Every structure is written in structure tokens, then in C-alpha cells.
Length: 331
Image (cartoon, rainbow, N blue to C red; front, side, top):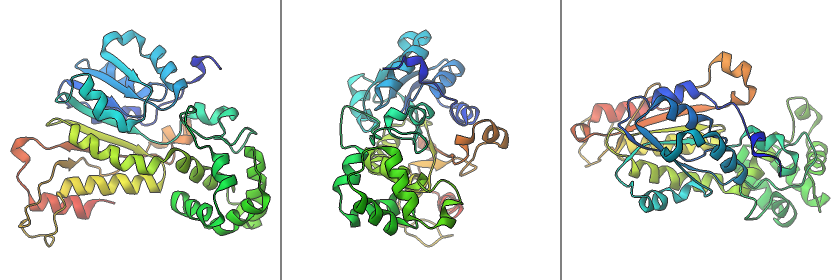
């Protein structure tokens, strides 16, 4: 195994993340996708009143973050588990009422892409793995070689909006067995029109769709966001960095539901349905990396940041005008 120091990357929108959590009360910050610990390091350095509980499914990430965050000592508690375990872990550590912030940095870390043996890269050859946690299956190879054509087509459409999903699924089934990343890249390239190959790497969406399916990213995300909102104390904040439309749709829907309380009343009228908003959306409703950051770190270009703050008791009364704004203003 490579040394843990190879797991390092430039955290996306780190200044914006530090700003989001600036006003939160002292307490526990949950980093649901720890990665190499870049966001965690910046937040612990800036906010002396915070301690950190971090989660990651990748053992290499946990090892690297442990090394990086060692100077913060007992302020840090790291767990090699998926973020759906946050409620249980926080309860076990006695912090059910202390959660001042939750950060989700979704998607893939650069070190995972850059190591071909992990199977995430469509530029270098490696096994078709794509698991964040390599101690549990299935792998991308299992999906590619065992799912029927209809299932493969559906996951390409649903997880990556791949417009040539049918042709790629047909090509995959006809070429099986497929064992390596570059074998799959070749199949994809021969399945799509030449014009599509000139618009960018033809395998990008297929690899994204497989990675999401292997790790059940979208299914786990919805449940974890609801957990996070429930865990937050008054004045606590939730921030989510999403990197593709499927993730961002889920984040936007969950936050909008929490901000409106599920209100079904006509827009512009006082709420009469008893809806009780639990958060207020922070503006701007979505933010993207600066031009400078996108130039410095091209992998940040697809990032979108959304954030919300847990209502205080004074603001818990349903406010129809604020609810309407939260609903109509979301994009």
C-alpha cells in the first residue's frame, strides 16, 4: 500500500466553507466525507470552539487525515465508516446535543482518481473496482459483467444523464467479460458516434455512473442529509459540496423541503397548513468556485455549494414570505 502521505489534495472552496461555518456556536463539527482532511484542518484552525467527528469509507483517507489532523489532538475523532452512521457514532460519543455543523464534500478525491489500481480513472489501466471501501463489494466489474442490458442502460441514464446509454449498454453486454478500465474505455469508444468522442472523453459519464452505483452514493445521500438536519442544534449549519446534477438535485430538494416545512399553501399567502420549517437557506442559494480556483484546480469546476442554518426558537414560527422565497428562489 502506498504511504498515506500520497493521499493529499486541494480542498474545494475551502475559504467559502470556512465562511459558512464562521457564525456557528461552539460544539461538534461533523465532516461526513473527510478525504485527506483539508477542509477539517482549515475549520479546526479557524474555529477554536469546534471539535471534529470525521467519517470516510476509504481507509487510505482515514490514515492520511489521521496524520494531517494529529496536531489537533483530542479535538479530533475519526471513523472508517460511511456517513450514514453519524447518528449512532455521535450518540455513542455523547454529543447528541452538540452538533454545530455538518459538512458533506461529495464525490471523488483526486488521490482516488490518480491511483489506477483503484479503478476510478479512465485514462490509465487498472482493475474495474471503484469501491470507496475496498473491504466491501460489489465492484464495477461485477456490475458490468453481471447486470442485464436494461439495468446497465438505466444506471447510465439515471446516474450520469448519458444520452448514449442504450448503445453503451449494448456494447458492454456484447464485449463481456470486461476486466480492466481501459478495456471498458475501448468498448465505450467503439459504441458511441465519432462526434461524441470529439466532445470530451466518451467514458467520463459511464465511469461516473458506475462509481455512483458501486457505492450507492445517491441512496445514501438522501438519508444522511435528513440525519444531518435532525442532528443540528439551533444556529448550527449544514454545507454540501456536490459535483454532478444528480447529487445537487437531491441536496436542493432536501433543503427546500426543510426550509418550507413541506408547505402546500398557495405562494404569497400566509401558511395555513401547519408546516414547520426547520432550516433557513443561506444565500446565495448556490455558489461555485471562483475563476481563480477553477484555473488552479480544474477538478473543482463542477462543484456547487449549498448551505442552510437550523432555525432558532425565535424563528421557528412558520413565515410564509420566507417560505415562499425559499421555494421560488431555489435553483
